[in-house]
Image (cartoon, rainbow, N blue to C red; front, top):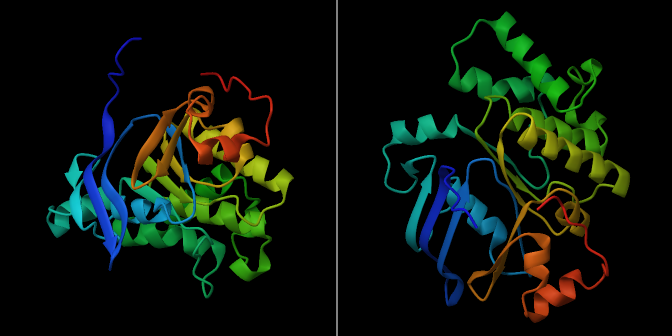
Length: 257
């Protein structure tokens, strides 16, 4: 096997996370390379969403280092962090759209915050992002409460990619969606990764997402990464949780890996 020479865009070393007497991560190491479409899975309490928050600088690990796009997240200056935040997007589990703003203004918020652009150009960028996310033009003036669950997720994606991020983080993006809408959302993520070159890291419980689009799966358990690889490599690991998780699918697709 040839060594993977792609750039490391996320580098976690010795991550320890404690909440009181509970230790969630116990010296966890993980690297993500540019172009990955990686799914992060694991049982309840394994700290998947916590790890995402630690990577993007929302929650400080007890010990260890987090390097994102060449920046030491927990040692960098405020200016360095601000520059890094322009280079990644985050979609939270429920979308976290501003309920008092229209969809267009939700998407425009990071553009107005980080870029000094004339308003007509901001509006044009918003239209482009909504189109990329698969939303019709008339969605722009709607409020989040007027959208279906699937459309709200797409609006959240449009906001997350507003600044053309190099890395996109998603926390349970298909939760609460019907199967058809969920698979359409998977197709959107695959498009963003394959055609736009965005590195995608997604926390998910959706087995169809794993089997359909994830080219790399990382399994958390016992405070560590207990498996890392393709679907076939993961399912070959002799671990009770992994075997139970995948047991509902007798035949696994090659997934192109």
